[in-house]
Each structure stands twice: as C-alpha cells, then as structure tokens.
Image (cartoon, rainbow, N blue to C red; front, side, top):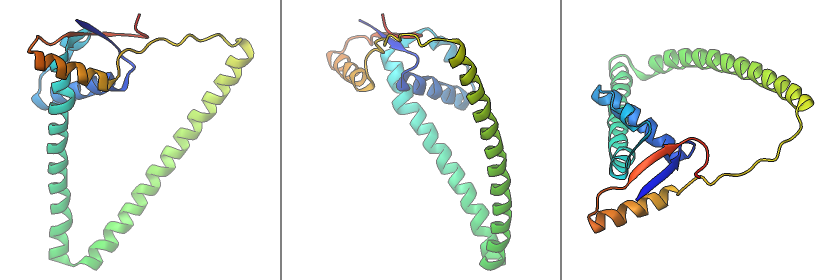
Amino acid sequence: MELKLNRDLWHVRWFFWSLSIVDEFFETSRSYYAEDGTNLCYFMRVTLIYAPIILLLHVILVGIFFFSIITLPIYLFGGVGYGLTVGTIAIIIVGVILLNKFTESLAEYLKERERRKRENSSLKKKDTVKKDKGPSFLKIVGIYIVEKKRKYLCPSITFIKGGVE
C-alpha cells in the first residue's frame, strides 16, 4: 500500500515543519531523506510525538527563563519601579514594531493591488480544475492504527506537488 500526499495539505506541511524542528533539536540533517517520501510510522512519530515533545520542552525552558527574569528583579527592587520601567520599555518596543509591521504590510498591500490590476486587465479568467488532495489527516491516522493492529509494515508515503492523480 502506498499513500500519495499533496505537499500543500496542512498535515504534510506540519510534518516537514516538525522534521525541521527535530533536525534542529538533534543537530542532524535527516530531513533530506523525506523530501520524496517516507513511511507512515515515521510520519506519525515526527508529527505526533517528537515535535510536540520538543515544543513542550522549549515552552518550559522559555517559561523558566521569563519567570526568573520577572521574579528576581521584583523580589530585589520592588514591583512599582520594575513595573514602570518594564512597562515603558515594552510600550516603546511594541509601538516601534507595530509601526514597522504596518508600513510593511501597507506597502505589500499596495504592490499586490497594483499587480492584480495589471493582471486582471491583461488576462481573462481561466477555468480552474480542482484536484483531489488525497486522504485527510484523520484518514491517515486511521490507516496507521489499522496497519499497527495488523502488525504489517508501515505503508510508504510519497509526497507530490499539486493534486493526487
């Protein structure tokens, strides 16, 4: 049995994103093995076990870091002075970031609008054909459970661009 999965599906994109997280965490470069395809067992391990555990570890580490950055100065110097200083700095930083994002998004919007105007004036609308995207994530989980229960080898997965033929 072979599954053909469209690279544009959310769970395939999640797999490749998770694979990059796993590679970064273990300081390896195994992701090139999965460019064309992999097997269902590895697909499920990366998406449902490895990546969530790594993300949870990062959340805990960042939480401990921020907790120590906030708690220690308040304990040593008091809450009012700390709150006013951090609040002022945060408002300035957030204001600059928001202004920068707003100007970037406005420039992108104007460029995109101009491009669409040119495109619409020069091209006629084409008929679009919807392509089958392949099995959904829940269908893949179901196939995985059935194959594990039967104790078969994991089916291979092939990643394709565009729709499933």
